[in-house]
Length: 284
Ligand SMILES: Cc1nn(C)cc1-c1nc2c(-c3cnn(Cc4ccccc4)c3)c(Cl)cnc2[nH]1
Image (tube, rainbow, N blue to C red; front, side):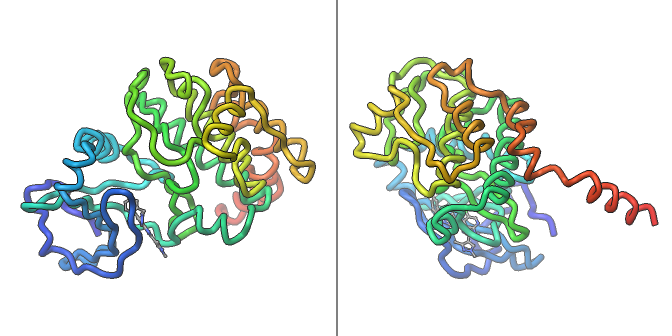
């Protein structure tokens, strides 16, 4: 079923509203069904008064502008938006398995094959974004959802910008994922997402972020690259993490190099025989 995209024809009456799925700093998200087609989606409801108070209208406009034009299996779709007198509504793809960080907290940490699969999908989504000169700038488990087939869906483009930029919007929330160049408020490019991918890989495998500490100490540890990868992490995974967590943005692995890294290849490429078997089955 297709969602009509022209926002003229979109209005609240079109939807049957279901359970609350979650809430963020601004607004709540509900499960919703489009009455005519039965299409399931997530409806994010934002109150204009809160947006004005938080002075986040421009951020929201940018999120809608950027996310509406993205089409990638690992990026959450924004199908459309509309508003009434006091609320803004975003019609978002429904991710059937919910929030990744809840799965991570429940599991403690992920197995290496599972973590590698998620990192490979993130690298694919980021390569797509960077080709369009979009930097996400807020990669963390809380901004990743899981689709009904277990695939990950990068969401929340409220912080994304068109590269390069040295936009100095105040950071609220965790500092754990901030690269040194953003802490120093230097101009920064898309390599900030590569640093965050390194932090994410570490957190998937270890269960906590590499520089996790009090806010002040976290900042110190980041700029001094003060982290240790526990011995239970495989040498290949440790190699990928250390090649992403480099102070100099230019020394960080590129997304192509991440996709070809031995740790990713080992866990994500179908084994040759398995691929052969798949091909033969399709030919039969
Ligand atoms: C929760 C949950 N459990 N299951 C089984 C599915 C889901 C699910 N949640 C979503 C959600 C979803 C929900 N909350 N949030 C966090 C949030 C809320 C408000 C503002 C900013 C951020 C996202 C979405 Cl967008 C899109 N799809 C979703 N699917």
